[in-house]
Image 1 (cartoon, one colour):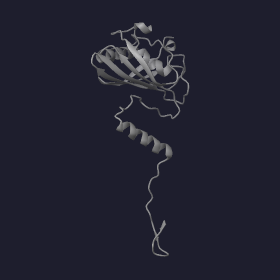
Image 2 (image 1 turned 45 degrees about the vertical axis):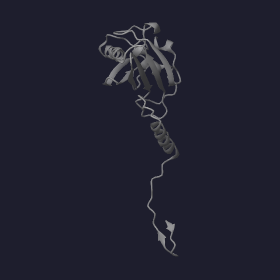
Image 3 (image 1 turned 60 degrees about the vertical axis):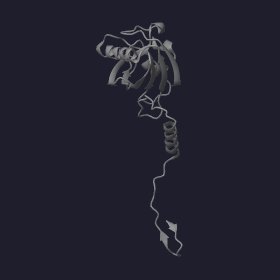
Image 4 (image 1 turned 180 degrees about the horizontal axis):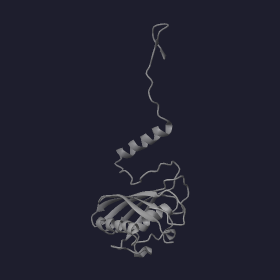
Length: 191
């Protein structure tokens, strides 16, 4: 209610939705990133606010078709038993696939707890004879420290013989840049 210029008369002002400070800041950040031409992340999101996450940018000296095929071969190999994840024998499941985006999940191996699977996205962008990848894995449960599990969720799908991994179709060579990842110890991925 507000006071009108006429004495003893009130005017009703309609209520508007007031956004919380975090919502306004998030909205402003999204608008700023969009105006700068920043692409959306391949991060799948999590239903839990406090969770472990690992986001990487990877540049391959291989074409995206080879990178895509090797990642898919390992996921399918995990599903049909022809490839074993070297990080505690995790089990991968393909959720969706296109030439430019692979969405999947990884459940911890037997004997390592009964947790919800981590979800991840791998976005591929062709750059001539090389391939740029945005990979992001996120825990789906309340978690702070994952001791490199989210890093390994994606790393183990593309690591090459130089990293100590066994390729199925293509031996990939890459340079990894960590964007957001508290733990990213490659030695943990091969245990």
